[in-house]
Length: 434
Ligand SMILES: Nc1ncnc2c1ncn2[C@@H]1O[C@H](COP(=O)(O)OP(=O)(O)O)[C@@H](O)[C@H]1O
Ligand SMILES: O=P(O)(O)O[C@H]1O[C@H](CO)[C@@H](O[C@H]2O[C@H](CO)[C@@H](O)[C@H](O)[C@H]2O)[C@H](O)[C@H]1O
Image (cartoon, rainbow, N blue to C red; front, side, top):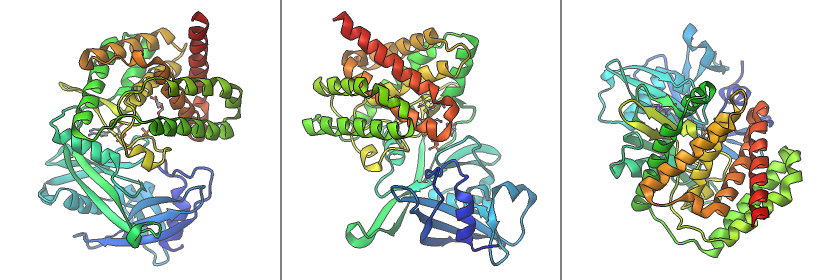
């Protein structure tokens, strides 16, 4: 037995959302808040923990429920047993926590109508809980794991799209923020979003799984890809109307170029073979920095097929506007280039082909073209008109994916590496043709 903090330290490294893979966690408790519950055997604590083990300290939200009796069904979600003999359970898996959270996120909801709560089983960066109302899955609550000062773009963007009447995102229900000590900020306090709730889309299919099935069966995905292109353009257009935009200054361009190069340097440390392509990749970045850039606006930021849900009678609905988990929050929380999203989705078609036996490149190419056509038809803007810039964003995404795969799924590292090689070969062909 050990104290609750020791139990969490031993457990946290195994969680999918723990970003410090490869480090032994070094946790420091910043705050512990007790939440009221009507369950007499449960004590709910929301603990904010700073992990000092990595290069950059990371703040995590760990809600736990302490109980004197452990039900067999709770065993897989046991964090540990503390010095007082209490069983410490991962909060989102315990109904006492999720019911208490719902009271805060949706105060108008009658708690008696909540009939069940369960954690979404997919591997995730955060933890989402599905809430049944009168026996029907109705609400999904996302509990953010890594916390940041300032608004979380997932909340800001989905709330803004929903308020603008867009049905391209789930209806927004409510959000919760929290404060914690931060000596680096004026007043010594930081504040950020810790959870939010939105409409649960029953029967939604994950776009990644749909695409994989199509690719594996050699089925034509172009109609769905074109619809996705149209929905993407519509979301970009609504975001540009609902939230601030700005002209692109030379300083903005320089900052993006620096971030591309910084990421490449980081990737080379983790995937040394990338060093062989550095010169060619940097040449693409340099060419992109020289061309015309569109206006900056808020974007999805980590756009791929897994962020698009195919909903019966509604079509594509987009989720998870939090941006890339490996990118600093201050970079994700401001206007950016919409082509970054287009590039993300192009990479995803390549991924679906790469994860399929025989690597059907024609399938990926047809899906890309259809996506472009859909995007143009809804917006009048053809991303292919910014080819140097689009290539740079695609390369940057593939470099990001190389880091992501080497840390999380080394068996898949070949997918982004081949993507990088292909992009560079295509650019070399274009240059030779000139
Ligand atoms: N509103 C929703 N309705 C139904 N399923 C959803 C909804 N939002 C998310 N999901 C499911 O949860 C998965 C993870 O959600 P996401 O927002 O991507 O979480 P994370 O930030 O943890 O990556 C999605 O891929 C989808 O399968
Ligand atoms: O969904 P998250 O916000 O957690 O995104 C991260 O994980 C994704 C993998 O789940 C990763 O996406 C990469 O793999 C996908 C297939 O699993 C593929 O469709 C994407 O194109 C590819 O980028 C994403 O990059 C990462 O941020």
